[in-house]
Picture 1 (tube, helix red, strand yellow):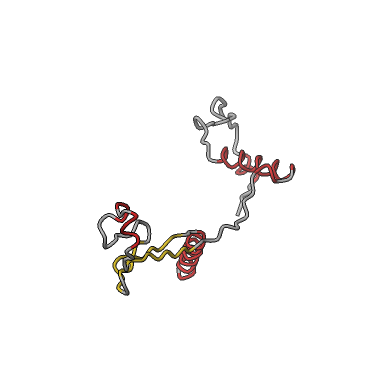
Picture 2 (picture 1 turned 135 degrees about the horizontal axis):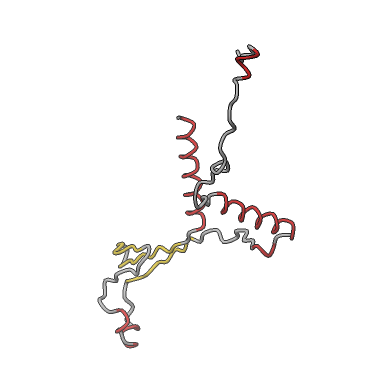
Length: 137
């Protein structure tokens, strides 16, 4: 029981490790002066000025104290991706035969086949084992 629990835990841990090592995300931070106003991971940050895009060029000359910081955490993207066509012919043949036989393994018979259904047992004239006194012990 402990072995099964450890196996499941280890498998789940490795699956999470692969998932998180390939995932990339961006952390955006918005500062007003030296104060952190907003942090966003999967969405846009809220700014302290309501509409940053509506500021005209004249007000850009008046420097405001707000700044945005963006940190990008890239995941692993050098994974080996192989397709069925990259395999040798022998491997393709083996995989296709294995897949076909595995799929057909779980197909049930349409009805139960009884091979001796239409045959009657032979007529017993005498019980030979009793006559010869031969018994299986």
